[in-house]
Length: 66
Image (cartoon, rainbow, N blue to C red; front, top):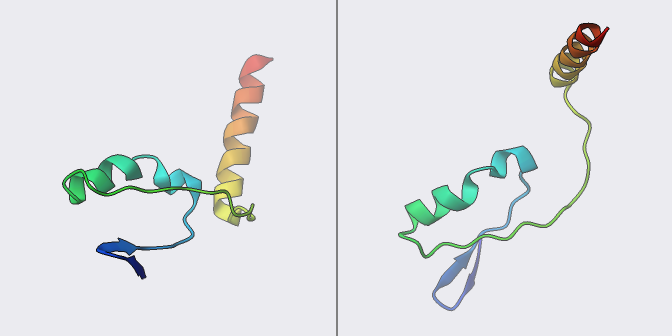
């Protein structure tokens, strides 16, 4: 954690999916004073169990189209 005057700066790496409601939650926790910025860092491999679920759902949707 860094500081900039009276501000605290927290830097972290978070999956994009986890940031869906982050802005609202942060503002709620900081009485409207918190701000956040996001910047793309990198792609990463999806865990096997998540990949299996995505593939299964895709295959189910493809069978429904035929």
